[in-house]
Image (tube, rainbow, N blue to C red; front, side, top):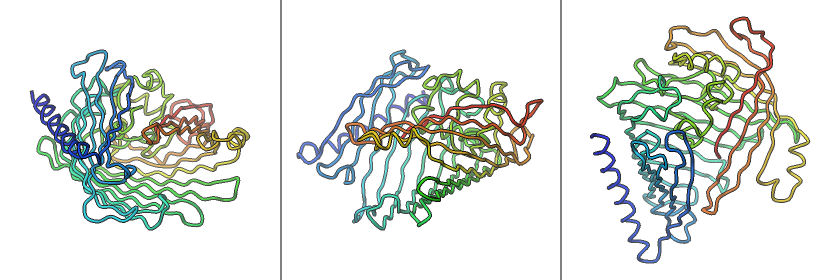
Amino acid sequence: MAYRYLQNLTFLFIFGIVSSVGVFAQEGSYRFTPAPDIWYNDVDGVRLGLRVLGEVEGTFKDGPHRLDAGVWLSTWLPDNPVSYYASFTEPIGTSDLGNETSIGLISSIRTGYSRHSLNLNKRWQDSFSEYEYKEVVISFAQEKMFDAEYRPFRQLWQNKWKSLIGLDFVISSLPEIGQFLGKVSVKQNVGSNVSKFTIGSVELLQKVDLNEMFKLRIRGFAGFASEDTAPEYLFISSMNSPQNWIGSGLTRAKGTVPETWLQAGSFQVGGGANLRGYLNADINALNAGLNPSFRSIWSINTELEFPNPIDNKLRNISIVGDLISFRSYLFVDIGQGSESVTGADTDVLSDAGTGFQLSINIPDYLGKDRGIFIRYDIPFWLSEPGGDESNFSFRQLIGVGAI
């Protein structure tokens, strides 16, 4: 009953947004651009829908009254066959190019997850380079996992409402050695349905252009969660926190990526501490019904990128070279988790290996980036392999992400 009530309210919310921007459309200054959409997961089956972008004509998705919305129908007709997503952004005050203050409203009910947020966004951009900026987001969100059928590992989720106040800060710059990106995120649950908890994370990435052929990528990550934190916000040594799986259509629900890949430890959801060599150990624990999460964790990931003949050939192909890239690299990961859910804290863990990444980015006809990257990593050495397994052994995993 509560879910139906919320669904009715949010549909009214979306209707109000669409009605308000419709006024601009009637005046001839606002444009809606529709596009069909199709996706799949093991609960909805084939999900058919319609995406819509709305904008004031001539602003090129950088003006007032920006709308990004979609509605879908599940062909297998589960308990809640209709799902939607809507985001409405309105700049406030005066904004120069790249420097904007805005209010954002986001509402979504899809794949068994309900999330509704109000954001205050501020961005500072010093030049025409979109890689040099600072951004602050203050948010209030209410969210709940209400249907565990969509989740591949149900023990990682809690089905209660959370009310989260959040602060996110991002800085990106282009020093002479290479691109730098820093992210800080803090969230506080203030809802009364569950225990109060705090979560925070810091992520730093530095790309070092050693020369025209070799590049070094260094990433540092640290995360902290207070006691009684909901399990979906905790940290797993080899992959991203479960709550962040919701952000990608590939991992939002089980079955888009075959479940057999997940259960075999062959597929990694990148992010978090990203100790990729320990994916199999974490998956074995999850398959046994355990929760291998930690309340605090730190890691350093390094990749030394080296040239390969495939990428060289792709770069020399007209047009294709601008859309497709093929990276090759050696990697070393090191990190440690503490305050584990199971009570079995780890020593410092490390792994090393080699990997390849194919990236394909072809913007759709709405102008949005739409592509994927596929990683194939071979962590052939682990400091703590566990059991009778050798430190040196052939191991492999695939990671897929959206652009």
